[in-house]
Length: 472
Image 1 (cartoon, rainbow, N blue to C red):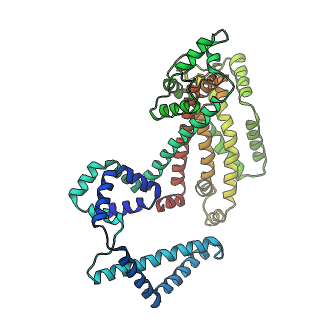
Image 2: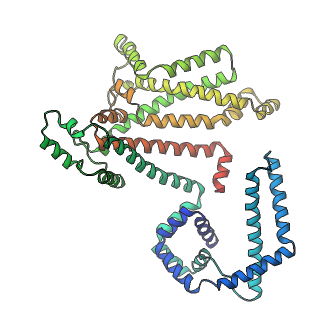
Image 3: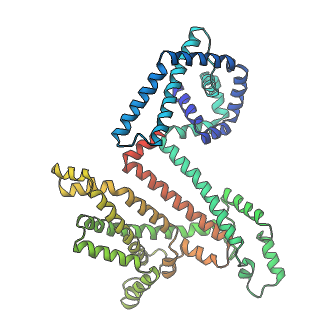
């Protein structure tokens, strides 16, 4: 436990942002430890530097440092040659210098420890070493946990590469949300439209307009209004809309279920269509199947969503009465037609992406090897081909899914669906600033969450990404 805590604190202090966070969250512990460190935490700096100079000179004279440099260069050269990299570029020199410095520092540190031990002295320690040594005392450790619990929670998150990655992305989402508010509010604030005049109508008097602006804070300077919106976002209070005075958060939560239903059904339809077609087109390139499927995918991309939706209403609802022409809450079949329109457009993009990604993989050498080993064609395509082509497919699918969760305004308008997209569009022309800000922040957070899930899916799909994540 002690060694793990020492290692965690050392690693956290090695990253600037985590160092600041650990110090702030563990301020009581850090202040006490720093005072103790200043009072008892080290030897004379000049003495330490003198001994270090002597040790370095001795290591240089006996050839230890020269041997370290040669070994580091030989190791790194073999590594670069193994991976087919050029040893003459700047990247090699930079990595070599870093490796040599690490090895030399380790050698000097080892000799310094031996020197101080032979003299019966204690070598000067860094603040983190002193802190870890102080926390060996169980009583001090318990007091530290009680007074600086947030710091230990952060270290617990930092200890696992997956929780650390998720935590970092969640922090990034916070900055994204505030950045979205800054950009969107600035655009709306300096737009030519006057919310008061648009909400109250042409017959409103100047006194009514001034009263509206005062109630909603629109008479205040830009920077004050921006700060008020930041505070609302920080407290999860999106305020009330100008039109109808409804709570923005409640309005978004009411419209969220139908949007996610439409997106999920449309996405399932898209996957069911695109994956088989994309695989067949990649396995049989430049054949009649390939040309027909890619032509249909291009047609699907080219068709305007509003026109396609209206044609389906005309044929399936008005002419043949097969499906309802508009969405009815609680009636599943009424969501089928808009889901088909959504899924068709998603499928067109996913089909082309699946074909290109799989086609590139099927031309790799390891696919030829798998075939030569006698594996069945289906096993080669599904396991070795599609498995390695999933990264670009998942990337595009995640982006499309996140964008659809943000609300497809055109499809929602055509089928009279009270979703997020139609909500933002309806409020845009006033402009109803609280409603628009709430809707856009929701979309940005949803897309960020979907991107996070896609990145975590990368780790499961590609062991190389998992290894890189653990090494950070």
